[in-house]
Length: 437
Length: 91
Ligand SMILES: Cc1ncc(COP(=O)(O)O)c(C=O)c1O
Ligand SMILES: [Zn+2]
Image (cartoon, rainbow over all chains, first blue to last red; front, side, top):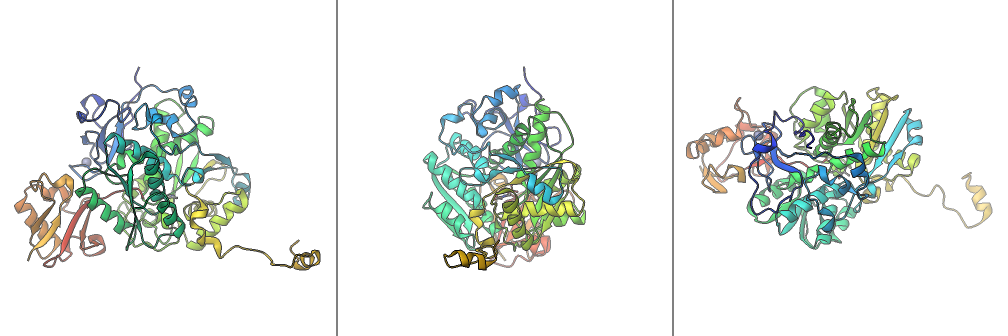
């Protein structure tokens, strides 16, 4: 028996699976699991599964289309405690667990009672993706991209990155025994540079911002044979990895959807895929349908999506980023318009906060829940706080906030704000005199 | 007045496989007219029905996105390098 095909979220009637373009005969059978084609999210045009990312008709983004089999909760629960428990819903082969990968996912979903109390929320969870192998949610997307690169017989595994992606690509490539080349803006946080350079001797720092690095990578992808740029020419496969965040949240809540989710937005890809995951779970009968309000978080110094949301317009005007939240510093977010659609359609919002509020968000999460997040998570927690204060978030509803990255990578953001409360001589009288307690 | 235009993979069917072509025009709009004359069909891929740049295409003059400049009215001086690049997501 075959479950209903889940179509790309907003594509106008994608063609049914049996009219999908013929696969490349050089691909092995089942190379992309239950995926059937790449479909344009804008016009529905389909192309064969391969290293393609833009629609030849309208330049729209290509997304993976599937013919899903019937999948049960029991089958998923019997799987490994990593993202491959959802392999039937990803564009990866059935034997994916046989290939070396970093095996990310199934990170903890923590009930955050202290933070909830502090903010005045009835029920709050933190989905903590800082414990992935290279300490950000990017290990999820890279694991799927690596599978695609392997099946397409790519020789070089590469990416333009704001840092976390570079870390994940360099590590996964090392484990897979592939040559990696990662491109970053030269002003990136030092820990993120080191976290890539330990795994690869081909870290390339580009004088420019992320959007410049991205442009360069797109040009290289157009010229070099055999390169798999995870977020350029194998982007459709890569992006599907973010769905596992949504699957895990639902499974860890006991197979149900939360009422509200707050998600950081750089390119916007992750937010759209968490939504797609929820919709697929409903379509497959794995969770009950219900409204889920989706909120996007940006730092004011790079807030093109939030700006468009507040202005009530559909087009996103690119910006030149200037914020400490460098992992969110994409001035020209390709999936931004879908974030606008989703947040509006679900009754959510897109909000932004200052760099000081980002730092406060980091400290707030650390001091209420013992989770040290990077600037992206500081942004998300800070935006959560602002959404409560401005009445945009319903405090009586069950809320999940996603922490996508680890604080040790952006230590500088708070290093000047915290430190010893006192420096004292090693004597009891000195301690008493310090007035610490 | 010659300007070099980098063509993305998905549009190379219009340029006979060439990744770089030469075109003329004082502005991006004129340049696209010239491209259309030499490679019929290409303009409609880059511009939408209203004649604006499509949502998912980024066009650069030098290293600058034309949306930071004058869009289709952006000057394309002799010797400039124009790049047409599909938007990508995910950093
Ligand atoms: C830690 C972290 N959080 C969130 C994001 C944003 O994800 P997206 O680009 O899918 O919006 C990124 C990277 O882009 C990141 O590194
Ligand atoms: Zn299309």
